[in-house]
Image 1 (spheres, rainbow, N blue to C red):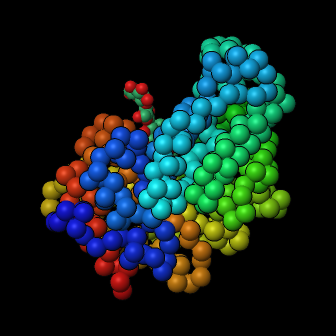
Image 2: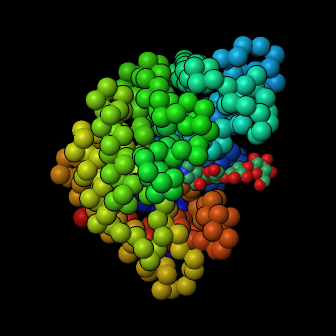
Length: 351
Ligand code: G3I
């Protein structure tokens, strides 16, 4: 294992195929060694949290404005990351415009009431708020940081056929309670209106390889595609080491591409709860065979815009907190050394 600051560049190795990205936390860009690692190995970044609605929306400003359809925004955190990206010549995938999670409860409520029990605002008000929010974010980003963002996660995790019974959608989402399934095309229509030329619009979801969910996503993507609203399918890619089904990932990727969509893998990590020798080797083999699969698709002509890791080193992964057990899911150790998985992915690029 060598220091990640010394290892050959991952993104250079994959330049003929796709961008290689990572999700960053705000603290990470203040650590010079981590910045060196990011700039060496990644040519695309996203924010793990700073670009989400709860990081942008501002309740006090909204109440002061007094407009029932227009929420106030505060771009301090967004701008910090976009400035970092611009200054280091990194492209950005913006995550995320519309999501049920990490959107403040008041955004959905009548009179902007900050109370879970308060009544929802009427559907037409919610859709106007959505349009205004998307316009404000996209215009701000594209005016102040032209050319920095290349793709937008317009809607995240809205399709969940398993958890909510019949139907395609995650009906427990406040978006559905407040506006029904129309919020999804409405979000994409707004994003299409305000996107800069060349920016792609992405639908993003987890377990997008799983057949029942895949087919539900395909149905919704067909509807969006018929109106030319979506360009890219974002397969998140949160996998578990013993259960990574690469054949299912490949089948799903081919099915999304067959709709005429580009692909992105937006949140790649492989949960692995030990760093003993056997697990380290198994992780390396899992990553190697997954990258071999995605590279094969690109060689066949399937457009893959980017593969983005959900974190830079194991120290900043969300998985230990979420799984409540140790996790060693990325290519770089917590002490910033490259793992055998890193070497395996790098070698795979050269084959
Ligand atoms: O900001 C507060 C802070 O003020 C407080 O002191 C601290 C105490 O726990 O919590 C902080 O908020 C946390 C936030 O991350 C920022 O660190 C939240 O509790 C925590 O829930 C939140 O987790 C994020 C999670 O999304 C929430 O949905 C993860 O960092 C982030 O990696 C994760 O990312 C999601 C993608 O957006 C969508 N796909 C799944 C992926 C993993 O869950």
